[in-house]
Length: 148
Image (cartoon, rainbow, N blue to C red; front, side):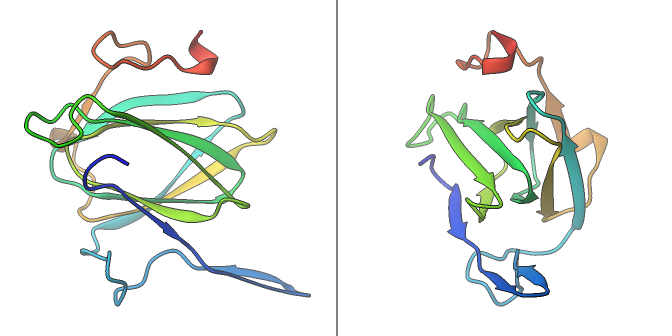
């Protein structure tokens, strides 16, 4: 695990009518604050990478489909500086991935149909708070399967 990243299993409550999928509660020990919730769809085999937030903590869950999330820690002085982490999230690997500010992140659609990444962020999105790199950035030591 990369320092500051949390992977919290999430509860699903199925019944004969469908199911409920929990994501984040204000009384959870890992809850920080509410900024906004948004949904990002990724098509099969597509990579959405790289981005890094300066202030925002991300809380990702994937209630539809399946994605691989990749993180890279460039933070000087971090116990895990230089580390790369892969996590698969989806309907059958249902968990909340909490990503602190300062990490590069991206994700790839693994399902045969579009996947939905839900993010309950700690602050509203601001263009001046995010930094982006190309999917094949030489600054990040990771090669995406779809980019090879």
